[in-house]
Image (cartoon, rainbow, N blue to C red):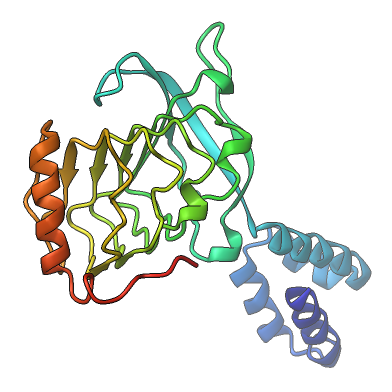
Length: 255
């Protein structure tokens, strides 16, 4: 709505006074094909185009996910069927993280219900996509790495009770909050190295009885990386608690 008000105010107050050069610069910024001709020929037609533009701007608060679907054996979950996000969804605001549509050509005989793995690499995903469970309810692997992800919350992961692997390395996560994994008790692998983590809730990993892969190095507070060892994971988690500033003194409450 704000975009509509700004556009219409500009048009009425500025373009009515024939400040054509400035108007044309606005149209150039908006990158609307043929807008210059529309302005010169018919202002009412221009209004209709601007309504379409402002409607588009309002709709841009939702996200369309475009997938390439294929089999994957890359992770510890074998024979998975994966959605590779191949077009940048540009999730830069928390309120614009709602997934509205998922597109892509499935392998023969497969549907969204068969998708057990989601992968996004080197995209702009500052906030976790909301509503993924409406399209992919059987995810066992979530892999969002090198995507500038800033935060992760219990509410983001809660729908994915079958989750086995969470791969979020090379992002910008700072805090692991209380109860983050409370609904993900099947987790075996958590990959969080090369983030900016400086504080964790001391009990954040306590309910994960199958947890055996832990990659947590190269954070502001780090621990050793562990591969396929439940006992070693316990030691690495203890080290993470010691190293992460305030983790033993203060609970990090979930949002």
